[in-house]
Length: 268
Image (cartoon, rainbow, N blue to C red; front, side, top):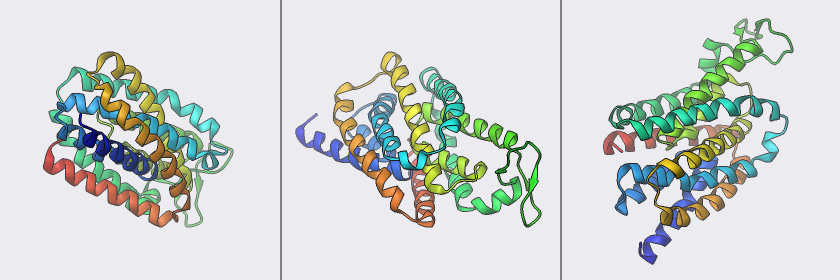
């Protein structure tokens, strides 16, 4: 790696860390950079996952104000997303990528659509109830509202699926997480984005542990990229707090579409 290539990677890590904290999809900057440097696909994938993991943690740290009152929810979900991440990592290391590469762009387009049409989808599935009992409620317009128990189950299923995806490929996992959480949780987008940062950090830590032992990691690349993603993640979380909810939502949708198109035409 030349000094020039190192500076490009550092800058890419900074931008990717900020994008991951704001919307997700930052790995679509760093992953192609690693391929451009000549790393094989799997090596680029696992090295990228390790490099962006510290940025996720920085994003979660910068989102602390939006995490207030969500401690119980976080503790209940962390084991599920860890299991999902382990499953995804195993799939990456033990099976070919061809089938999942084909499916990923369509998953991202679906995630963007889920977020873009969040209100209509909630009307069909039932908004989470903000009540202390287990009986289904009804909203003012008469639509059925999910019980807290059903909402908790839907959240577990959603984060498990996102954990599998994140453990396998990682790129734009945040888009999927925000879209899934927005569909089943009655929270502001800023608070959902903070949850996304925490769960992304958990996936990052899990994949670091697995890939460090079993994956073909290029540690020189990680040493250059990781500091950039840390700085970018912290700054990105602060920027996300200042963005109005509609702008944040459509920013995430735009990233989902762009990432899906890139994957669809590049096949990476």
